[in-house]
Image (cartoon, rainbow, N blue to C red; front, side, top):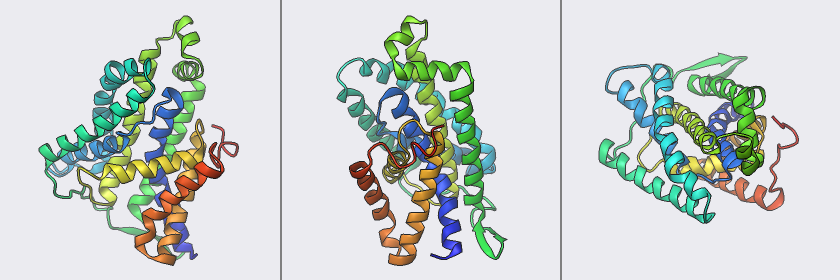
Length: 287
């Protein structure tokens, strides 16, 4: 594997980690596998497109607004739909997120159409040279932003009162409620935070490549593969897992061609679940 392939894998892995971080956060705290996570990613891209394509904004300026917009949509969905379902049949919230995924796809098609979109930016196709290696600028930006957001998530979860409430609600919701923690609010805030992270990944994905209303499924599977490699409850592990997946994918493209790009992701997902279901990086990064 050449150095430029390695560098490309590491940097693209940063974007994969950002997509996987929200899935891992929701599953770790709520015990919910959100099958609509890919649509939250695409929602961020579509919301940003209203400012970037229609109004000429830079995608990085539109990114925080897209994060806030998707978080505001996600909060009531969790608070008033998914949280009540969590108290009953365990399959009900899973089915509900699948239904939300289909609904979101239909809404995207109705509002934005079915033609591929992208978020134009001067750094979308440009690159810089580092030690003789050409690095695509958008993936360098995505890696830097992912590192910052992973660090911020770790700090919030481990160094703040809100993070203590999240950890308590995750470990034992009943006891947390007795101690005065509003578990429903914690769940909704966690889901909204994960949705904001997904939206950030969507904006960066929209700059790096085109997207359609049905682009959420492969992004969901990529995020699930990252979560499987990382192990539940490891923010640092998510970043390492994203990098590992990106390197593996880049190497497979070089060796076997672009047709194996997604196959490698799915194989990694199933192999890790079969061999080491607790994840590869849980002990390596326990943050």
